[in-house]
Amino acid sequence: MTREKIVLRIRRQDEPGKPTRWEEFALPYRPNMNIISCLMEIQKNPVTASGQATTPVVWECSCLEHVCGSCSMVINGKARQSCSTLVDKLEDGPITLEPLTKFPVIRDLQVDRSRLFQDLKKVKAWIPIDGTYPMGPGPRLDQKTTEIRYKLSTCMSCAVCMEVCPQYNERSSFVGPSVLNQVRLMNLHPTGKLNRDERLETIMGDGGITDCGNAQNCVKACPKNIPLTESIADLGRQTTIHGLLGWLMP
Image (cartoon, rainbow, N blue to C red):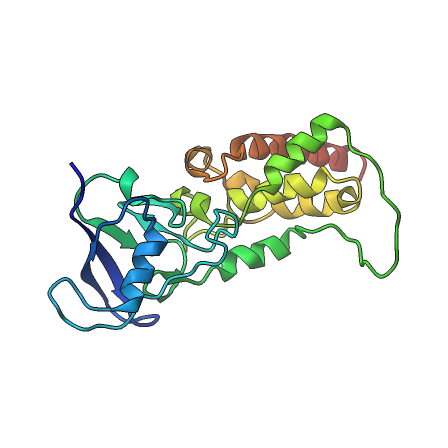
């Protein structure tokens, strides 16, 4: 049975610290609409299903191609990317939109993911090359390492894995699976290995790898199907060896 209209039930919040409220919107159905296209229709004419004028809904998006990771939200109770969530693939009935719960709300569906980016800085998730002069092609990677690094590099910091992780919350300093995955990615790079021990020592401390409870929700929820649990297991081996060598050779 084809939908006659699309009903969106959206949790709204005017600014940080303000109370939340629900607003419902009804849109004419069109095939192949995603959640972003629905929000854009509301933006053109922000009137609720009951006919009351309201403010445009605020959300984040950029690429609209499942690459930037900025449009994460909770859709029908499941954290996912709104650009790649098609209305036709959802069950009939009202579609519920809520902001991610593990980050402070800025407004409506937009959240502040500063904690994620600060944690990426904490573990030095970059390759230490200043780029001020040509350095040549650099060392070649074997095919297996290249394939592993490519898959890990598809992480778009969308924070979906953090949303489903029971250990990642405001009471914990756990850096989360996405950040740990970036540590493995950088440590697999020939130049990135220069800071390998520093990264490992960072994740051996507070909020690091030992805070992972192995719930494995992250790998199930990842929009890019990144092997996050493999990354965490690999880092577990790396930190164990690093710790033993540090103990044997002070």
